Amino acid sequence: MISVVMPVYDAEKYLDEAIQSILNQTYKDFEFIIINDGSTDKSLEIIEKYKRQDKRIVLITRENKGLVASLNEGIRISKGEYIARMDADDISFPSRFEEQISFMKTNLDIAICGSSVQLFNEDENFSISRYPQKDNEIKFTLMFMSSFAHPSVMIRRAVFDTLKYENLEHAEDYQLWTDIAIANFKMANLDKVLLKYRWHDEQISQKNGYKQREKSFEISKMYLSSIKGAEVIRKNLIINRNDSTPKNLYYLFHDINKYRKKIDIPDKYYLGAIRIILRMSNPIGLNLYLTYRKFSKNINKDKKYEIYLFLQSVFHLNRESTMYQFLNRFK
Image (cartoon, rainbow, N blue to C red; front, side, top):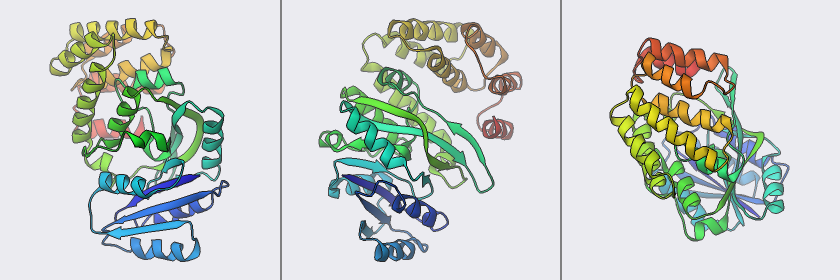
């Protein structure tokens, strides 16, 4: 029923936990495709140990080709009706597949289903990331940022009859989500924590944050160009990106607010969108923060996060500054 696809590259430190979390799923009808993408550490040895113990594991081992090539290769040889993603440094909760398969069998129009995730590192669990749940909320959020935790998703095979991961460095998941949205597939997230998402310095997203942001902005522009009624948002987003002034930010927030009311998007997703826009301004000045406050004055906000944004604006923090990174980690 399910094909689990997990690329592995030099992941020996976390691989045992990741593999065990899949093999210990309460839902048992799956194959576990592991692509050893030219690892130079003991990853292959660890995978082979588990393969001897569990016949559901399908091992591909070869030279390094990169994440996107590995994902597409795993999907191409898969046999399941559903494709479940997994990363070699994360931990799936035992009921993850059971919860997702039950939801997708009940909601036959849903093509992709993700979940909330628990962020953690070696020392602690430090926050829960929740994502929009309904199709229109997800597609609205995709205008500005990714709406899924990549390793939490389960996707119907039918999606990959026409789509695949594109070879875009650092943002292949965001590109796929927008492609799925443009193709008019229905999307959902479960408001349940079904995966522990490991936060560490070796992650691609941590090592290549600037490149990832730039690529994500290009994907956002492309996606906005496909949405009827969002043309002015795209135009003003580009203007604000090149020249972040209170005036430009005002027009952008006004257009986003007008659009979200038309498609009935709740306050919290609008608030998330304008926060993302504010943080794209580099650096965030106090005058920009006050514009943001004006457009969000009637929306309930998390005080801790607002202090975080306020401090960024007061100190005009650049994204690459040490203080910015500190606040970003502990917000």
